[in-house]
Amino acid sequence: MEIRKRIAAGNWKMNLSVSAAHELFQAIAEAYDTLRLDEQRQVILAPPFVYLEQLSKWAEEYPFLHLCAQNCHQEDKGAFTGEISAPMLTALGVEYVLVGHSERRSLFHESHNLLSLKVDAVLRNGLIPIFCCGEPLAVRERNEHFNLIQQQLEDSLWHLSALDKILIAYEPVWAIGTGKTATPEQAQEMHAFIRKLVAARYGQQVAEGLTILYGGSCNASNASSLFSQPDVDGGLVGGASLKAQEFIPIIQSL
Ligand code: PGA
Image (cartoon, rainbow, N blue to C red; front, side, top):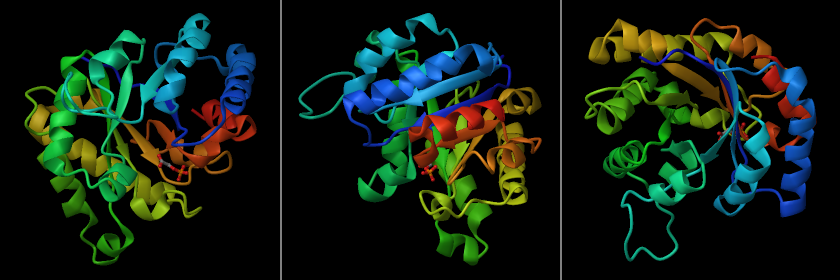
């Protein structure tokens, strides 16, 4: 049975030069002792694929700094030019993989079915999926956001017989990269809804142990109010994770 964690995850997307990545990592490493991380309170970094190997070496001395890939292919190997497989990530010491980020869904047309195969590939290789869900603005305006999130979870996760090796990130699409954050109440409402769905499908104990992150314009000034909600267990942070002076206070708000 998994125990619920507090997590600050930085999704660097396709950003940072090698030297900027090093500088950012150094700043986090220098602050490491002050962050009071432990089994229950952790940091996850999701750099571009090409930095993972280097970062896994840098992160060796920091037990509660974990690595995440931003994507992977659903097959373990084969003729898929340009793709990266889950076993390759496992071999580098990566522990998490983002699955179903809204940019993958919209810009790369990843379907529910494909995402369910990716979730399987990640789990099969001993990695932990951070499964992202979230509704576009038009869906919220039609008041269909609960239905859509339910659908996204059912279509890509509910085939699993157990849900104890998964993290969920709720990222309303209208809040990603827009500077428009969900209010703590909106985040709490959806996180509680997700936990309730998980309880109905996998039982109360699994739901209680599930870590649910909020993502979408999370920054140093709004992190504490978001993370203080009872069902918000941390954040998946894009833009603000690229700057140490933003990301470190976010970690401190856990
Ligand atoms: P943002 O991105 O923090 O820049 O809004 C979040 C994400 O896409 O994971």
